[in-house]
Amino acid sequence: MNYPTFFNEVENLTLQDPLSMVLGAFEGGEMTFNYVDVVKAAGHSCPTVAGAYLMTLKALKALYPHETPVRGNIKVAFKEPMEEGVAGVIGNVVSQLTGATDKSGFKGLNGKFARHSLMEFNAGLHSSGRFTRVDTGTSVDVFYNPSVVPPLPDMQPLMQKVMSGSAEAEDIKAFGTFWQERVERILMQNSDNSKMIRVEHVS
Image (tube, rainbow, N blue to C red; front, top):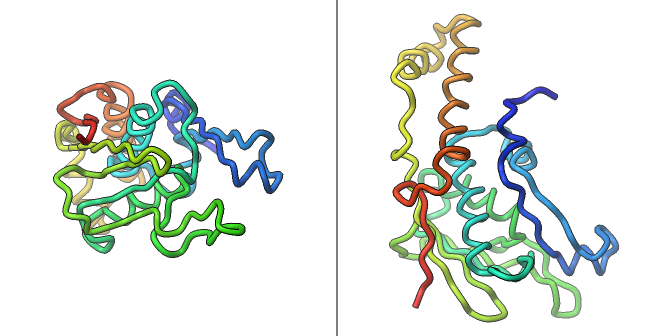
């Protein structure tokens, strides 16, 4: 399986999942996700998928500054309806990482470990997303604006060719290279750029 090498350089996210421990899936309930895991589930790597990964990574660092984040203990809300724009794509990535779902998730064992009703859309937020610890009620808002990292000018004509069906094989390859070059800049060169992504504690 070949993919851009920078995928392996993106910071991993380690969580503790009590449900997986109880059911014997992972010893101690510890599991680690990397960017490749997210790309496999999404089927592609793009500014939206990269942003969802970064949003979750930074939100959980803020919510759990001195401890391992607990999967299944995190509620997530988004300002847009699920069907609007890329909200559903972001929600899928965040769900994979945090375990939170709207209504389709695990119903729990004897009232514990439930994953459903932990994700809300159309929440009327000003931020891109709000992450909340279920146990403490502590919340952070995450703001993500990928337009701060625009694509290179050479990508646009190639995109037009690809979308129109007139692209040759070398055009498609070049387009993919330019596309991932932008994703790499988002994940590797701008992950600490507060103009692109920032976290604020909710008072």
